[in-house]
Amino acid sequence: MERIYKTMRNIGGANIAVGVVLISVGIIAGTVSIVTGAVLLKRKSEITF
Image (cartoon, rainbow, N blue to C red):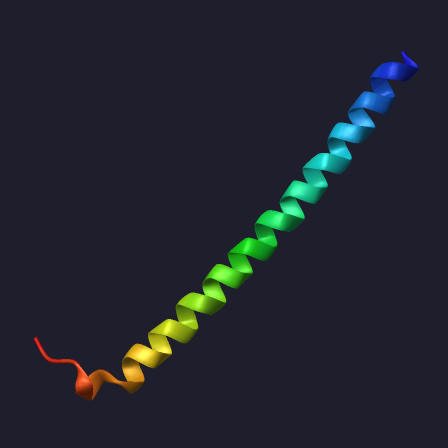
């Protein structure tokens, strides 16, 4: 029984680590999107079609 609990503890820790990484990637992607959108808005007058 102890082995099962140790395995479950390790898997829980791994899930928390993956969650933290995914949250970090999401925040970084959102920041990059906002910055690039601001650059596009700043240079709106230079864009011609």
